[in-house]
Image (tube, rainbow over the protein chains, first blue to last red):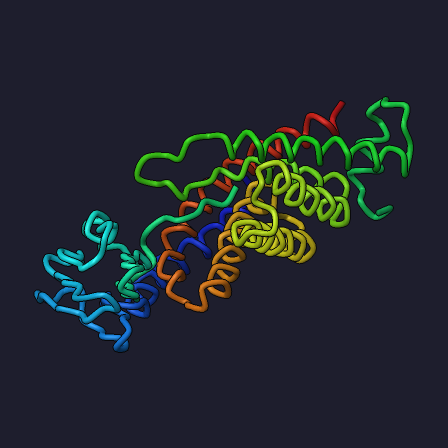
Length: 120
Length: 184
């Protein structure tokens, strides 16, 4: 390792350390939201909220429960209850779909701190 | 390529029986093959606990060796060829992951070429460490484009620090390879 190596490495390391707080504060502290799309339009709630919503679907009511930073469909007027069996979702981009009722529950926003791909 | 003195002085004396363009093609091919194998080996390693995004950048060893022995053009051939071939072999070609790999490889190579020309006293360690940081930024730029969000840069400072250490380590290996090839 030459002196030039040490200097270049030191400069980059210092730049990274100095920019660390800047990068963190510039990052999104964006809260995650729950978007519930049904035949009657889209309703949006904070994922942090504590609420039970009844959405009017194409066949009947769909009950969406938001609690403890997660969403679940607890009841739905549909033959197979796939949406209820999906359980609770909490990760950005996760979806619960109740197809017969035309209701889609989706989590939006949030930090990109979850791994979804790895570069080889 | 005639300006690459290591090539003229070191490799011609390596008693390979090859000369000039033939020698260059032979080295470029051997280094590309090495880069592809190293890339495949690395892609088959399991993710490290707590640091699943950590990559050693083994393939960059071959790129650094190519840059130091044969110059920028051969290094570009090795780097670009490796990205495409590894992309084909791992099935990630034409995916966002492939775009990130290509962006990282391109910026890494660009940084190393510029630094080699502007700071000739840099050894393989400094070149590789800076190239590794370039790789991180190339990936982040592509990721920011793909996602349409700059939030990935929050991860930049810690990634840069890790990249420095890992890049210096692979640079050390590359330097060892270069000195063994040229001082025969």
